[in-house]
Amino acid sequence: MIQKKWFQIPVLMLLCMVFSLLVTGCGGSAKNATSAPANPTTEPATTPAGDSYTIEHAMGKTEIKGTPQRVVILTNEGTEALLELGVKPAGAVKSGVGDGWYPHIKSEMDGVTELGDESQPNIELIASLKPDLIIGNKGRHEKIYDQLKSIAPTVFSTDLAGQWKENFKLYAKALNKEEEGKKSMAAYDKHVEEIKAKLGDKANIKVSVVRFLPNAVRIYQKDTFSGVMLKDLGVARPAAQDKDNFMEVVTKERINDLDGDVMFFFNADYDEKKGGTKNQQEWMNDPLFQNLHVAKKNTAFQVNEIIWNTSGGIKAANKMLDEFVTFIEKL
Image 1 (tube, rainbow, N blue to C red):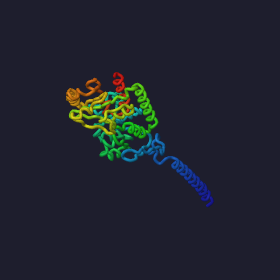
Image 2: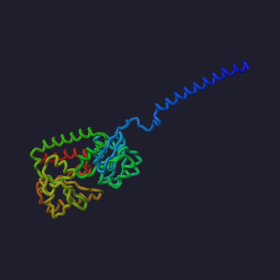
Image 3: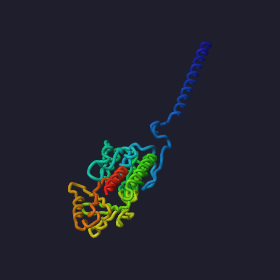
Image 4: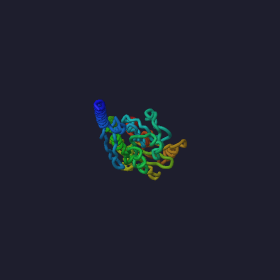
Protein backbone atom coordinates (compact mmCIF):
# COMPACT_ATOMS: atom_id res chain seq x y z
CA MET A 1 0.00 0.00 0.00
CA ILE A 2 2.87 2.37 0.80
CA GLN A 3 4.39 1.81 -2.65
CA LYS A 4 1.00 2.41 -4.28
CA LYS A 5 0.55 5.84 -2.60
CA TRP A 6 4.10 6.90 -3.53
CA PHE A 7 3.26 6.22 -7.17
CA GLN A 8 -0.06 8.17 -7.13
CA ILE A 9 1.38 11.44 -5.78
CA PRO A 10 3.82 12.16 -8.64
CA VAL A 11 1.15 11.28 -11.18
CA LEU A 12 -1.29 13.77 -9.65
CA MET A 13 1.39 16.50 -9.58
CA LEU A 14 2.23 15.85 -13.21
CA LEU A 15 -1.43 16.12 -14.24
CA CYS A 16 -1.74 19.46 -12.41
CA MET A 17 1.33 20.85 -14.15
CA VAL A 18 0.02 19.85 -17.59
CA PHE A 19 -3.38 21.39 -16.83
CA SER A 20 -1.71 24.65 -15.74
CA LEU A 21 0.32 24.86 -18.94
CA LEU A 22 -2.77 24.28 -21.06
CA VAL A 23 -4.67 27.08 -19.31
CA THR A 24 -1.75 29.51 -19.75
CA GLY A 25 -1.41 28.64 -23.43
CA CYS A 26 -5.13 29.11 -24.10
CA GLY A 27 -5.09 32.46 -22.31
CA GLY A 28 -2.22 33.67 -24.50
CA SER A 29 -4.03 32.59 -27.64
CA ALA A 30 -7.18 34.45 -26.64
CA LYS A 31 -5.21 37.63 -26.04
CA ASN A 32 -3.63 37.48 -29.51
CA ALA A 33 -6.99 36.87 -31.16
CA THR A 34 -8.58 39.99 -29.66
CA SER A 35 -5.68 42.28 -30.67
CA ALA A 36 -5.76 41.34 -34.36
CA PRO A 37 -8.57 42.39 -36.76
CA ALA A 38 -11.11 39.68 -37.49
CA ASN A 39 -10.68 40.23 -41.23
CA PRO A 40 -7.61 42.32 -42.10
CA THR A 41 -8.56 42.55 -45.80
CA THR A 42 -11.79 44.49 -45.24
CA GLU A 43 -10.06 47.83 -44.54
CA PRO A 44 -7.92 49.17 -47.43
CA ALA A 45 -4.56 50.30 -46.13
CA THR A 46 -4.61 53.49 -48.26
CA THR A 47 -8.03 54.67 -47.09
CA PRO A 48 -8.23 55.63 -43.40
CA ALA A 49 -11.54 54.96 -41.70
CA GLY A 50 -13.94 57.88 -42.22
CA ASP A 51 -11.91 59.37 -45.09
CA SER A 52 -14.90 60.15 -47.28
CA TYR A 53 -16.72 63.19 -48.65
CA THR A 54 -20.15 63.88 -50.11
CA ILE A 55 -20.75 65.61 -53.44
CA GLU A 56 -24.03 67.36 -54.26
CA HIS A 57 -24.79 67.14 -57.97
CA ALA A 58 -27.59 67.04 -60.56
CA MET A 59 -28.92 63.68 -59.36
CA GLY A 60 -28.65 64.22 -55.60
CA LYS A 61 -25.80 63.40 -53.22
CA THR A 62 -23.00 60.87 -53.64
CA GLU A 63 -20.49 59.71 -51.04
CA ILE A 64 -16.96 59.09 -52.27
CA LYS A 65 -14.39 57.27 -50.16
CA GLY A 66 -10.76 58.27 -50.56
CA THR A 67 -9.28 60.01 -53.60
CA PRO A 68 -10.53 58.30 -56.79
CA GLN A 69 -7.84 56.49 -58.76
CA ARG A 70 -9.80 54.86 -61.61
CA VAL A 71 -12.13 57.45 -63.08
CA VAL A 72 -14.54 56.99 -65.98
CA ILE A 73 -15.60 60.20 -67.73
CA LEU A 74 -18.63 60.35 -70.05
CA THR A 75 -18.39 63.88 -71.52
CA ASN A 76 -15.76 65.49 -73.71
CA GLU A 77 -15.57 68.64 -71.62
CA GLY A 78 -15.12 66.39 -68.59
CA THR A 79 -12.19 64.62 -70.24
CA GLU A 80 -10.43 67.98 -70.56
CA ALA A 81 -11.18 68.73 -66.92
CA LEU A 82 -9.55 65.49 -65.77
CA LEU A 83 -6.46 66.06 -67.89
CA GLU A 84 -6.15 69.63 -66.63
CA LEU A 85 -6.23 68.31 -63.07
CA GLY A 86 -3.54 65.73 -63.78
CA VAL A 87 -5.88 62.72 -63.87
CA LYS A 88 -5.68 60.30 -66.79
CA PRO A 89 -9.09 58.62 -67.05
CA ALA A 90 -9.38 54.85 -67.02
CA GLY A 91 -12.03 55.22 -69.70
CA ALA A 92 -13.59 58.07 -71.67
CA VAL A 93 -16.17 58.56 -74.40
CA LYS A 94 -14.69 59.17 -77.81
CA SER A 95 -14.40 62.66 -79.22
CA GLY A 96 -17.44 64.10 -80.95
CA VAL A 97 -15.91 64.19 -84.42
CA GLY A 98 -14.50 61.03 -85.99
CA ASP A 99 -12.83 58.25 -84.03
CA GLY A 100 -10.55 58.42 -81.05
CA TRP A 101 -9.54 61.67 -79.41
CA TYR A 102 -9.49 65.33 -80.38
CA PRO A 103 -6.09 66.41 -81.75
CA HIS A 104 -5.37 68.86 -78.93
CA ILE A 105 -5.64 66.14 -76.25
CA LYS A 106 -4.59 63.04 -78.20
CA SER A 107 -1.05 62.94 -76.83
CA GLU A 108 -2.41 62.75 -73.27
CA MET A 109 -4.83 59.89 -73.93
CA ASP A 110 -2.50 56.96 -74.54
CA GLY A 111 -3.81 53.86 -72.79
CA VAL A 112 -7.28 55.29 -72.10
CA THR A 113 -10.13 52.90 -72.96
CA GLU A 114 -12.63 54.34 -75.45
CA LEU A 115 -16.20 53.88 -74.19
CA GLY A 116 -18.28 54.72 -77.26
CA ASP A 117 -20.30 57.85 -78.00
CA GLU A 118 -21.06 60.52 -75.43
CA SER A 119 -24.78 59.98 -76.01
CA GLN A 120 -24.58 56.18 -75.66
CA PRO A 121 -21.59 54.92 -73.65
CA ASN A 122 -20.90 51.20 -73.35
CA ILE A 123 -22.08 50.23 -69.85
CA GLU A 124 -20.59 46.73 -69.90
CA LEU A 125 -17.21 48.15 -70.84
CA ILE A 126 -17.50 50.73 -68.07
CA ALA A 127 -18.16 47.98 -65.52
CA SER A 128 -15.19 45.95 -66.77
CA LEU A 129 -12.84 48.83 -65.90
CA LYS A 130 -13.82 48.58 -62.22
CA PRO A 131 -13.90 52.37 -61.71
CA ASP A 132 -14.05 54.01 -58.30
CA LEU A 133 -15.77 57.12 -59.74
CA ILE A 134 -17.98 57.76 -62.77
CA ILE A 135 -18.64 61.31 -64.00
CA GLY A 136 -21.46 62.01 -66.45
CA ASN A 137 -24.15 64.53 -67.33
CA LYS A 138 -27.87 64.58 -66.57
CA GLY A 139 -28.84 65.80 -70.03
CA ARG A 140 -26.89 62.99 -71.67
CA HIS A 141 -27.10 60.09 -69.23
CA GLU A 142 -30.07 60.47 -66.87
CA LYS A 143 -31.69 57.25 -68.13
CA ILE A 144 -28.65 55.15 -67.23
CA TYR A 145 -27.83 56.81 -63.90
CA ASP A 146 -29.11 53.91 -61.80
CA GLN A 147 -27.04 51.43 -63.80
CA LEU A 148 -23.93 53.56 -63.45
CA LYS A 149 -24.26 54.15 -59.72
CA SER A 150 -24.58 50.40 -59.20
CA ILE A 151 -21.07 50.11 -60.69
CA ALA A 152 -19.36 52.93 -58.78
CA PRO A 153 -20.10 56.28 -57.08
CA THR A 154 -21.50 58.49 -59.85
CA VAL A 155 -21.58 62.28 -60.14
CA PHE A 156 -23.54 64.17 -62.83
CA SER A 157 -23.31 67.77 -64.00
CA THR A 158 -26.59 69.36 -65.09
CA ASP A 159 -26.02 70.86 -68.53
CA LEU A 160 -23.41 71.14 -71.27
CA ALA A 161 -24.35 74.47 -72.85
CA GLY A 162 -22.58 77.40 -71.23
CA GLN A 163 -21.78 75.76 -67.89
CA TRP A 164 -18.25 74.50 -68.49
CA LYS A 165 -16.79 76.52 -65.60
CA GLU A 166 -19.42 75.34 -63.10
CA ASN A 167 -18.92 71.78 -64.32
CA PHE A 168 -15.15 72.03 -63.99
CA LYS A 169 -15.49 73.06 -60.34
CA LEU A 170 -17.87 70.16 -59.68
CA TYR A 171 -15.49 67.66 -61.26
CA ALA A 172 -12.57 69.01 -59.24
CA LYS A 173 -14.54 68.48 -56.02
CA ALA A 174 -15.55 64.97 -57.05
CA LEU A 175 -11.91 64.11 -57.76
CA ASN A 176 -10.85 65.47 -54.37
CA LYS A 177 -8.76 68.08 -56.19
CA GLU A 178 -10.61 71.26 -55.35
CA GLU A 179 -7.45 73.27 -54.66
CA GLU A 180 -5.91 72.21 -57.97
CA GLY A 181 -9.16 73.24 -59.65
CA LYS A 182 -9.03 76.70 -58.09
CA LYS A 183 -5.49 77.16 -59.42
CA SER A 184 -6.56 76.18 -62.93
CA MET A 185 -9.49 78.60 -62.88
CA ALA A 186 -7.24 81.36 -61.56
CA ALA A 187 -4.88 80.71 -64.48
CA TYR A 188 -7.82 80.92 -66.90
CA ASP A 189 -8.98 84.21 -65.36
CA LYS A 190 -5.46 85.59 -65.69
CA HIS A 191 -5.42 84.51 -69.33
CA VAL A 192 -8.69 86.37 -69.90
CA GLU A 193 -7.25 89.56 -68.41
CA GLU A 194 -4.17 89.27 -70.62
CA ILE A 195 -6.35 88.94 -73.73
CA LYS A 196 -8.54 91.87 -72.66
CA ALA A 197 -5.42 94.02 -72.33
CA LYS A 198 -4.43 93.11 -75.88
CA LEU A 199 -7.90 93.92 -77.23
CA GLY A 200 -8.11 97.43 -75.85
CA ASP A 201 -10.81 99.42 -77.68
CA LYS A 202 -11.38 96.52 -80.07
CA ALA A 203 -13.43 94.85 -77.34
CA ASN A 204 -16.27 97.17 -78.43
CA ILE A 205 -16.69 95.44 -81.79
CA LYS A 206 -19.78 93.28 -82.27
CA VAL A 207 -18.86 89.62 -82.62
CA SER A 208 -21.15 87.16 -84.40
CA VAL A 209 -20.82 83.37 -84.01
CA VAL A 210 -22.37 81.10 -86.65
CA ARG A 211 -22.44 77.35 -87.22
CA PHE A 212 -23.17 75.78 -90.60
CA LEU A 213 -24.66 72.29 -90.44
CA PRO A 214 -25.53 70.13 -93.46
CA ASN A 215 -29.20 71.15 -93.33
CA ALA A 216 -29.35 74.17 -91.03
CA VAL A 217 -27.63 77.37 -89.96
CA ARG A 218 -27.40 78.41 -86.31
CA ILE A 219 -26.52 81.67 -84.64
CA TYR A 220 -24.91 81.03 -81.26
CA GLN A 221 -25.92 83.18 -78.32
CA LYS A 222 -24.49 83.78 -74.84
CA ASP A 223 -25.34 80.48 -73.12
CA THR A 224 -22.84 78.56 -75.23
CA PHE A 225 -19.24 77.50 -74.85
CA SER A 226 -17.94 80.30 -77.09
CA GLY A 227 -20.50 82.71 -75.65
CA VAL A 228 -19.03 82.30 -72.16
CA MET A 229 -15.56 83.30 -73.34
CA LEU A 230 -16.83 86.27 -75.30
CA LYS A 231 -18.77 87.42 -72.24
CA ASP A 232 -15.67 87.00 -70.07
CA LEU A 233 -13.76 89.18 -72.52
CA GLY A 234 -16.48 91.82 -72.42
CA VAL A 235 -16.98 91.94 -76.19
CA ALA A 236 -20.28 93.10 -77.68
CA ARG A 237 -22.71 90.86 -79.58
CA PRO A 238 -25.21 91.64 -82.36
CA ALA A 239 -28.76 92.15 -81.09
CA ALA A 240 -30.02 88.75 -82.30
CA GLN A 241 -27.19 87.00 -80.46
CA ASP A 242 -27.09 89.16 -77.33
CA LYS A 243 -29.43 86.83 -75.46
CA ASP A 244 -28.95 84.46 -72.52
CA ASN A 245 -29.98 81.51 -74.65
CA PHE A 246 -28.17 78.70 -76.43
CA MET A 247 -28.81 79.22 -80.14
CA GLU A 248 -31.41 79.86 -82.83
CA VAL A 249 -31.83 78.23 -86.22
CA VAL A 250 -32.17 80.89 -88.91
CA THR A 251 -33.34 80.88 -92.50
CA LYS A 252 -32.18 83.22 -95.25
CA GLU A 253 -35.04 85.54 -94.36
CA ARG A 254 -33.00 86.25 -91.22
CA ILE A 255 -29.60 86.35 -92.85
CA ASN A 256 -28.96 89.80 -91.39
CA ASP A 257 -28.79 88.15 -87.96
CA LEU A 258 -25.48 86.62 -89.03
CA ASP A 259 -23.91 90.05 -89.41
CA GLY A 260 -21.64 91.95 -87.05
CA ASP A 261 -18.34 93.79 -87.14
CA VAL A 262 -16.74 90.34 -87.16
CA MET A 263 -18.23 86.91 -87.81
CA PHE A 264 -16.60 83.72 -86.59
CA PHE A 265 -18.04 80.61 -88.21
CA PHE A 266 -17.43 76.89 -88.03
CA ASN A 267 -18.75 73.99 -90.06
CA ALA A 268 -20.26 70.71 -88.89
CA ASP A 269 -18.69 68.18 -91.26
CA TYR A 270 -19.66 64.78 -89.86
CA ASP A 271 -18.31 62.64 -92.70
CA GLU A 272 -16.49 62.77 -96.02
CA LYS A 273 -19.51 64.46 -97.61
CA LYS A 274 -18.68 67.64 -95.65
CA GLY A 275 -22.28 68.78 -95.58
CA GLY A 276 -21.56 71.72 -93.28
CA THR A 277 -18.97 73.14 -95.65
CA LYS A 278 -21.27 72.74 -98.65
CA ASN A 279 -24.07 74.57 -96.87
CA GLN A 280 -21.67 77.30 -95.73
CA GLN A 281 -20.44 77.87 -99.28
CA GLU A 282 -23.99 78.02 -100.62
CA TRP A 283 -25.00 80.61 -98.02
CA MET A 284 -21.90 82.75 -98.29
CA ASN A 285 -22.10 82.85 -102.09
CA ASP A 286 -25.65 84.13 -101.90
CA PRO A 287 -26.07 87.82 -102.87
CA LEU A 288 -27.92 88.39 -99.59
CA PHE A 289 -24.83 87.36 -97.64
CA GLN A 290 -22.54 89.35 -99.90
CA ASN A 291 -24.45 92.44 -98.86
CA LEU A 292 -23.57 91.97 -95.17
CA HIS A 293 -20.94 94.11 -93.44
CA VAL A 294 -18.70 91.09 -92.70
CA ALA A 295 -18.69 90.16 -96.38
CA LYS A 296 -17.94 93.67 -97.60
CA LYS A 297 -15.16 94.17 -95.03
CA ASN A 298 -13.85 90.61 -95.37
CA THR A 299 -14.19 90.00 -91.63
CA ALA A 300 -15.88 86.60 -91.72
CA PHE A 301 -13.33 84.17 -90.26
CA GLN A 302 -13.54 80.39 -90.23
CA VAL A 303 -12.39 78.85 -86.94
CA ASN A 304 -11.91 75.34 -85.58
CA GLU A 305 -15.27 73.85 -84.57
CA ILE A 306 -13.58 71.48 -82.12
CA ILE A 307 -12.04 74.37 -80.20
CA TRP A 308 -14.95 76.80 -80.49
CA ASN A 309 -17.82 74.39 -79.96
CA THR A 310 -17.68 70.61 -79.66
CA SER A 311 -14.83 69.97 -77.21
CA GLY A 312 -16.20 72.36 -74.63
CA GLY A 313 -13.55 72.06 -71.90
CA ILE A 314 -10.96 74.19 -70.14
CA LYS A 315 -8.15 73.30 -72.53
CA ALA A 316 -10.24 74.32 -75.53
CA ALA A 317 -11.28 77.50 -73.69
CA ASN A 318 -7.69 78.66 -73.35
CA LYS A 319 -6.99 77.80 -76.99
CA MET A 320 -10.06 79.71 -78.12
CA LEU A 321 -8.90 82.83 -76.28
CA ASP A 322 -5.61 82.75 -78.16
CA GLU A 323 -7.28 82.06 -81.51
CA PHE A 324 -9.77 84.89 -80.97
CA VAL A 325 -7.18 87.55 -80.22
CA THR A 326 -5.03 86.45 -83.18
CA PHE A 327 -7.87 87.35 -85.56
CA ILE A 328 -8.89 90.55 -83.77
CA GLU A 329 -5.36 91.93 -83.67
CA LYS A 330 -5.30 91.82 -87.48
CA LEU A 331 -8.26 94.22 -87.80
